Length: 184
Image 1 (spheres, rainbow, N blue to C red):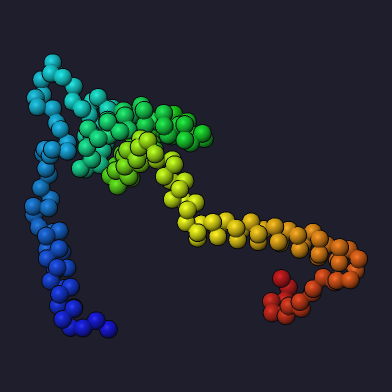
Image 2: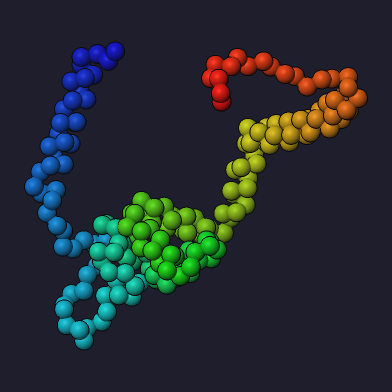
């Protein structure tokens, strides 16, 4: 059991975090942020906003998600729909658009996808990934275990067991099961 001193140390930050979560400032809508550039005027003759350029309304994207990063690394809404269609052959255009809209509301997933796209652009990415996976002895051991185990089972079944059953040297095993539920 944890000591009383440890419990006292853990209770204070927990209470503080809980109090801050329900403070009125937590519910105040933020109108601008460096991550979410907005149109400076409502004049329709001004340039379109970044949200218009990428094809999403501000409310269609997760809070705190940067449209600049989305445009730079993922492209426009149409680009994302094309990627979803390419990766999911069973999707039609409508389903792909629905999934893109759900995806854009999940900030963590979009950020991870952006990080993946950035990482993919590194020149040595594929070589490093291969080296990381196949330089670990545990991975090589796991592959060897599966290959040897699979081949060993196939050998036993086809070369050892099947001929013995066919010749009658071995009989099938019958385990008597009690009839606990009669009529079934």
